[in-house]
Amino acid sequence: MKNPNVKYYQIQNKPQFPNPKEGKIKQKRSAKLVVLGFGICLVVLVYIGVLDFAGAIQIPYISSDNTTPPNLLITEIYPNSAIKNELDEYVAITNPCTHSINIEGWSITDNEGKIIFPSFSVAPGEKIFVTRNASVFVEQMSNVTSKDKDIFPDFEYGSDSDPKVSQMQTEGKAFVLRNSGDEVILQDKSGRDVDVVIYGDSSYKGGGWQDEPLRKPREGMIFKRKGFQDTNQCEDWLLLPFGASYHVPEKFSFSGEVTVFVSPDCSFSVLQREIDDASSSLFINLYQFENPYLMDIVLDALNRGVNVCLLLESNPVGGIRDEELYIAEKIKERGGEVRFSHDPFINHAKYVVIDNKTTIVMTENWKNTGIPYNNSFGNRGWGIVIKNAGVANYFKEVFFEDFYRGKEFLIDTDTEDLKTKVLTREIPEGSYAPVFEPLTSYYNFTVIPVLAPDTAMCNETILGAITSAEESVYVQQFSTGRFDSVLING
Image (tube, rainbow, N blue to C red; front, side, top):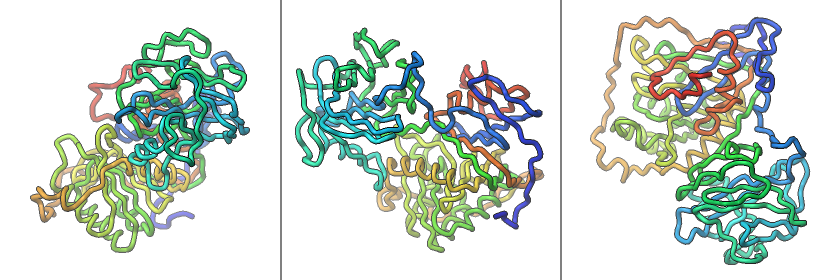
């Protein structure tokens, strides 16, 4: 259904886009690749027409010797826990296959101790968690997961802390993941090695691993596999803080409405229009929020009964200004929920999910300079409005993963030193003559969200787009002082 209040532009050409397997564009006609950049933490790649970008939905299993993929993969290892006695250390195993697998008699070993599974069937796509102490695991996981997505272990191998969690049989020495280095070997019931991962000072020389060990983990850091990538090398793995998520590149293809806009020309009017249309929910993730006129629009939504959740960065450059604390206080007073992300989960994104069907991603903070009320003044910035439930649900899931890791904003304690009791309503003006209106297209789109640090630097996203370009790449950056050499060489 087209919006009668916006202009629509039909795109005439239907370009084909790069296939990384072939390393070149499949050209039927002249093609241009448009990359819309949104800050250092969140990017959206938007393709108009037909997309042939292999492996964008889920990083596929890649066998190092072109054999059949293994039955199961080790996908997470947490050896150096941040709590005393490290009772919440764990191993996660995932089934990448299309059929269920019974793991009765299978085992995990570090070549010293062994823990053996009872009868259990792992469903396709299912991830199971094996931990030393189930009760401690649940307690720690609850601190970094949303209320409706608590993670429970499937097995424990230390003390029997929870009768609802299956106890694993032990053999040999106690199975303990050494902080300095160890092997984690998954074996089937015949003792065949199904998957092997080594880290730190491990001296393992057997089969199943073809690289140096993964680096020694710092306290509170987890090894996470990149999707189902399995070359038996270090490049398959990331080292992330406890509770951090990893999202493989995902592709959304749909026929619908997309609007692009720029600051200072038309960003305020686009945000105002979309938020004014909100009827059920606003999930807002920002680095900084200091614009009083955008606050008014959010407060109006709360007055209409819209559910508002706001996530902000707790340690922006220069610190949190009183204006932002004032806005957070007003939104909380009207019934909104406000949280602040904190180290090590630093938040630099700027996006909004509206009514579970609209997503707005921007480069600019909600400040007078970023989204100015008067468009004769302000920063050059970019934004996009995507009308698609699939994209909205993707960003909603990411939002709540980050939101519930944040610290709840408490008016009594977080605003006790607040000096600003009334926001200034002064409207900065400049000499810029606005040029650009919002551009809305109704067409076939493919959208690939790119999250940092998850997938920003991989061939399925930005690197692949740049290295496969044949005609042009346009880059607009605030600074290139620390620009990655891989991008430059691309």
